[in-house]
Amino acid sequence: MAWFKQNEQKSPASSESQTSTPPAAVPAAPVQAAVAPVEQWNGPASPAPAVPVAAAGVPAVSTASRVSRGITVRGEISGREDLSIDGEVEGTLRLAGVRVIVGASGRVRAGISAREIVVHGEVRGDVQAEERIEIGRTGKVKGNATAKRIAIEDGAVFNGTVEVLRADMVARSNDASRAARAGARADARPDARAEAKPDAKADAKPETKADAKPETKPETRMGQQTAQQTAQPAAPAAPASASAAPKDADKSWRDETAIASDSVN
Amino acid sequence: MGLLPKLRTGNGGAGAAAAPAHANGENLRPSNGLKEFLGHLGMPDNARVLDLGPVSQATVDFFTGQRYRIYSEDLLRAWQDFLAAELAALMAAGVGEKKEAERPAPSERASRFLDAQLDYPEESFHGVLAWDLIDYLPPELVQLLVARLHRLVRPGGAALAIFHNRIPERFHRYRVLNAAAVEYLPCAAPVPYGRVLPNREILNLFSKFRSSKSFVGRDQIREVLFTR
Image (cartoon, rainbow over all chains, first blue to last red; front, side, top):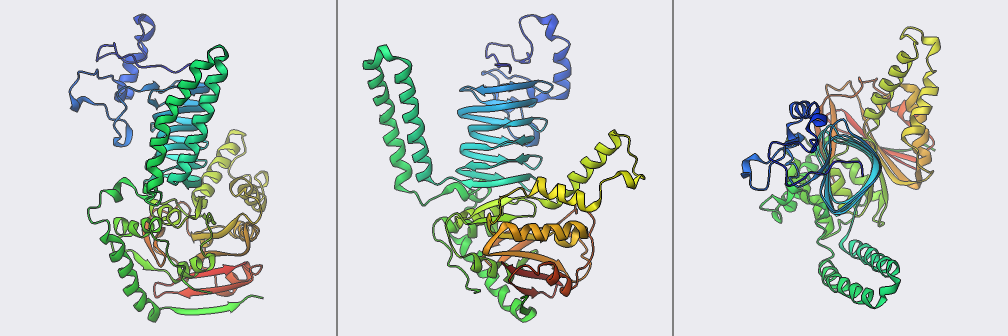
């Protein structure tokens, strides 16, 4: 893995690019701090207001690993920690269960698979999130987006197709991936098959619970609701007023509209 | 034709619910063209719709809420980027702006652009939405684009395009709020306005399509639905 991992033991003032050999890191650190203050690390004990804010107002992931500005990574990135990208990445990002933030200066030429993906920079490749994808106003995505919820800010550039996952589709894909994982584990430890079985069973238990939940209300499809919309207090009343307005408007429109219909052939 | 498809309940509500979140009333525009377009598409699951305007949350919400599959290609911006990239490449190669002979022919450039941007198999889409677009593009690109759209739309599919009857004051981004209304928001045009296309020229351009139906508003915006 070529990207840098933030060390929780570091002092609050240290940048993640600083290593135990200060002479090598010293020239880079002040520059990074000046260019991108978001990279300053606030320790776990630091007060809430000190949480760094990434570009476009998105809170930076405090425990995230980071590909810093000026760093280029080629290859596959996988892991179980949130990842913030301000540099360049080419290859594949498989980060199941975590959040990936592509900062305003981040450039990714790779498919991204994660729990949550936030794009303020540029991504060329398919983005697939278990939960949600957010493309900020400075974000550019060229590729297909698949998630339960997709939020696109005005000004964002998106070329590709949007697929909003329904709950039943998510459950099916979870089943498949868990079964594959369980199978892979069992295969990896042929001498411990007796252990592998309970392990798979233990995995299966939460699966059934997790799967049962979405299936009970498959039609809620929160996927279509943005954060903005969910914040609306009078959500049920909204569609009625929305449909009423165009209806009335439509009446007057009919008077104003000249309808011409002709067949070309 | 022209029957408004019954909005899906449950999931479909999300599309309608998006309206008040975005609409401010001032820029709301009833759209008979959209109504006809949706009526034409019917309600097949995963019907594919290609939106050639700037991406918008409301439009994505609306179509995904109706279980359409929405594809987004912001063609005007892509054209602007394409021209800028071409110019940069020419400058890097030492070909000056004035040496027209050394620059690619307009039709060749348009063809390359479409190959790069609309690289979809034939008959991929049930419907295509072309908001403020066609009268902003140069003629050589428009002809190729319309021919390409004809190939991309399935037989029986439809394309909804907007034209201006007079030179528009502003460029607009369009957001689909519900099955019969759009919101139009003024913003900077990625490329300068081209020219007003007379009705006959529009029909000639889309002559390969089986039929057309147009709706002209008092705001001098003409919505035309072309059926393949």
